[in-house]
Image (tube, rainbow, N blue to C red):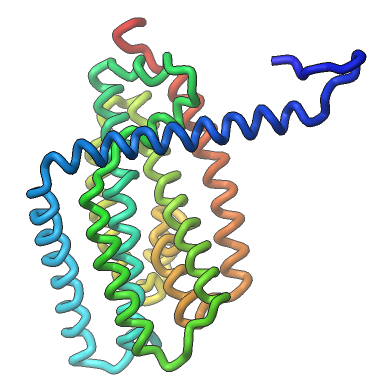
Length: 284
């Protein structure tokens, strides 16, 4: 698309207008799919009760395990009971975000590639990565987010130090960054289906590793700590936001998280573009 000209001079603001138009188009796309999925989910309200029971059982199991730990000790690698409640809350919130938007969309991409119906995404006049990331929403999984917030507030009220506005902003930023890193990892794994078709077993492996996130990564051996931070970014997704609320987050850690996020987005985009170009489906 060429930039509009006036008297032969290109309009320097035209690229900004195009970028703004694409951004608004993306927001409308997200809103449309979210609205449709909410309407569909509201037809089956009994699923809310089922999901709530499942979420409460999972959270209760984690809290029981935490209680057993503190029956034997007052701290776990320097983390007190209220601080680990904060970690548990963040772990539950991130798990809810994964179940709400990341897992269902990545699963649908794998299914479309395996069945040869991914053409319906590639032929749409929107960015294929964006569309693939917002087609499915499991609204009832937001119960995990709500329960996680309850546990988070519970933990914060027991902290020895107060949580200020800057701490809250740091928490929001690191939580968004950590969730984005999980999305990047999952999309890279999902893109592998363009080469290997079936990647379902890798997703199951991720869920197993994610369970380790209910405790700070610092409690694990060095090799596992590095793996849970840089290979499977549970440390960035759960531990770093928890550190922002418990006074443990350093500016170096924050910069590392930001740098890792930029790199992860670049790698994810590269892998997605290369993979989608390899796709040959029903219309090929």
